[in-house]
Length: 132
Ligand SMILES: CC(C)(COP(=O)(O)OP(=O)(O)OC[C@H]1O[C@@H](n2cnc3c(N)ncnc32)[C@H](O)[C@@H]1OP(=O)(O)O)[C@@H](O)C(=O)NCCC(=O)NCCS
Image (cartoon, rainbow, N blue to C red):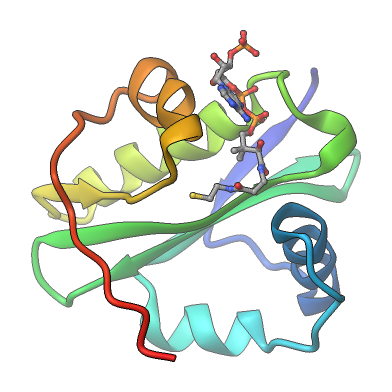
């Protein structure tokens, strides 16, 4: 695959909304991803193929040394070609370059092969409360 990865790339909200709807199996929403990540995130990675957005990951931040991977998304038809791994590789490099000491992620059991085996995360206990 001739995919180009870019940190803090310009993207269209509609493209991330389409990836999110397909990736998390919900209707296409009208979320202002650009406004959100520009205001709150350490950064984000876009994967482009011939100018089309085929992957995205949001790297949230505590303002200090902790960064958090959220919303890892690869276009359905392009999965299992290393794009997800490429997104995470760049997220790791850029978080380190920004001075962060830890990159966190949480995920469901079946994605252990992706985050742990393929992307190099160490499994650790984590907790979560559904607030709504
Ligand atoms: C999870 C996701 C981002 C992976 O992207 P991808 O581009 O397919 O991943 P890669 O091709 O880089 O995968 C690298 C390796 O990780 C593992 N892997 C990837 N997807 C996997 C899955 N769904 N289940 C189990 N292992 C998986 C495989 O070992 C794979 O190597 P292989 O294809 O040679 O077997 C993609 O499936 C996706 O967008 N899913 C829907 C949204 C989602 O659940 N995001 C994660 C939220 S925490």
